Length: 434
Image (cartoon, rainbow, N blue to C red; front, side, top):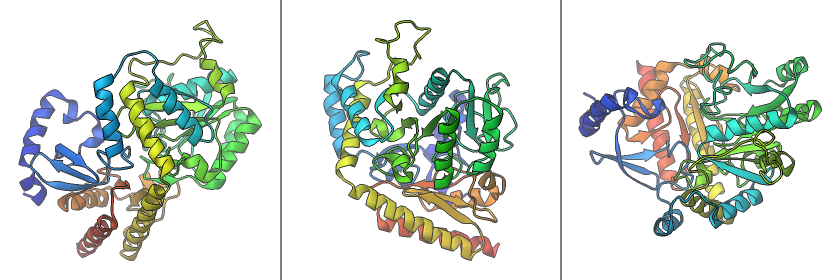
């Protein structure tokens, strides 16, 4: 029995119970890892406490939503106050205006915004908007880019990229064009053959292993979309407000037509999504201008823009705007982690690191991946799993089991990073001995 198993007996019991009522014992398959996940009882800062009282340094950090760490005091304070005043009313309120205005001020591409309950919904509506605006149907998406569970985009997320996922029909993805990431030449040739409504891209392929887009790739997509009259959609569910106050588009200096957001935009505490862009596009959602359901692009949701989410979101985004030192801190830690772990992996001929800012990917591949296909098809899954397990044995949790990567929050410290580097070097030494 491993150290992890002997110290997490209550979690093992809970997982056995969970399997009776939840498929696979979890509500999201990536939350499972061998031999079973630990069950959290408390979270604070960069730490998690499980039901057995074990403490972990958390780089999963709410799927990247907790840029300030768990239970950030200003956000928790506004949540407590709002709980007494109202949580969800289903009618307009001032918080949604304040959050919308804050997003408009921070994100270069967004003049107007609509709120949803997930990043998946935001991407779904962004695609619908592009199709309505251009009166075309084809959507370009890239290998290994993850845009949520929407049928038209839930394709070519993991290899083999030409295989349809269970439950999806060929009809659902008939108008989806799948192209390689970071390969502008292929995009240029492909769009000549059809009328494209929109091109959707992750500026950093998060679930693909924190693979950043090359600047020239994003600039080229901007030029192509301008040339063919398609809308460029940045999926900034991960990168929005994480890479900078204005997200990846501010860092890359490439402005999309439509931006989708999630995670951080809800204060890091609530289910949320958002999509926005220039008034010219967003007007298609305007019920004052388009009275008919058939003329207007529909968007809605029972819990969208609820008072609890918008109050938390406004508070967090205001903090990020006022405190640029937050980005200095997390980006410095991210750069150190990428550099130090990267040096270890290369020294022991095990792999490479990728990422940007506070996003760090670890790849057990023979070459450094610049696209997700390389990262996914050439990785040593066994080493990835063993690395994850080694971290777990040392009370460190990464995201995910077969594709370890790290989100850094403002609560993480230089000591946390140095310990993670030390534990990684121990792993590398052990692997080379085997």
